[in-house]
Image (cartoon, rainbow, N blue to C red; front, side, top):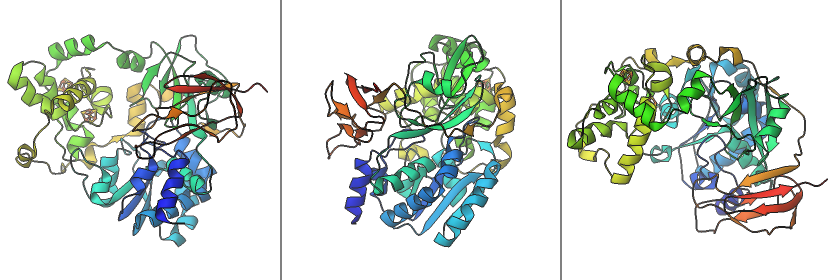
Length: 446
Ligand code: SF4
Ligand code: SF4
């Protein structure tokens, strides 16, 4: 099959990044590359979904890497794992080695999966500021995305998603569930909640958001559901109103600069210094604008807010607000300004990496550190609500109508060929019971 036809097949199967922003996979694979990196480091504490997808789908995973290598012409393929998953490395080695694929073992640190960090650690090359791995000849994909690429070429669209359900639940579990399944159905798989005031952290304790609505649904980019009590310090921090963190940040920051000294992007030599962004709160006008520029390269990892700051301030949220404003106003550093800034990798970078076990203590989640074993149970929920906008690009438009009967795997929404985006597929057999511009609900009457 020609490269164009394989890319079309990957697009038609609806393959998007399964571990982050949901970038359509076919678009990344259009580019020629030197190096493919499989991101299997599973950065967020408590999640096991990447680990389980490699265990359950090891042949497909290697097949997906082979397809990606052929599409991009890459000479090198590296599977990046953490030292805690040495058993996965031993499992993959006999399959990867004959294919000339390497396995790279990283320390169990956070955030190892940030593309800028991962690419530097594996290749020794830095992604340009604000740029993409493809600019330096590297394609990075999450391991589940790679499995989905193999399935796509075998004509199987994306209908299911690996997720971990953990935290204050009876039995933490990892499962492969239909896209669009409700959070409550997922939590039932884990035996239900064990507390009276539960909320859900979606997709991770560090970078995930707080969801109180148990009728929300799993998308193609979901990584996990972590149930915590609503008064857990992490939940309280993450739900603080903007005026609180701005006011307290303005008055309580003593400019100790711990947030900058432990910032992983700063340590890698990117123009990010959260303590200067905090200082910008003390000023108005030009001086404030100049200091704000040090927020532009923030990857939102939350190390500064949830680990580094001794005053429990929230430089991450202030960096995110500032970064968004810089984007709207074109206020980032110019190329000539950047050329005058020292941007080398910090000599103490390795010594300042944050070990995940230390993070468990600091975040107050040690009691939830239980392995989420894979559930073999096949789940067919009574209904699914499938989002149409979970990928980067143009949201898909429905191609079905209310009352239509669909089979799992049928296209139910699509994006025009010339636009960035992918079709969306039914994940169960059933009748379309609701259509909106952002989702399609399918009910299984059987
Ligand atoms: S670590 Fe906290 S107190 Fe220190 S400079 Fe950063 S925000 Fe301010
Ligand atoms: S969230 Fe904080 S630590 Fe992480 S990149 Fe942004 S400023 Fe640095």
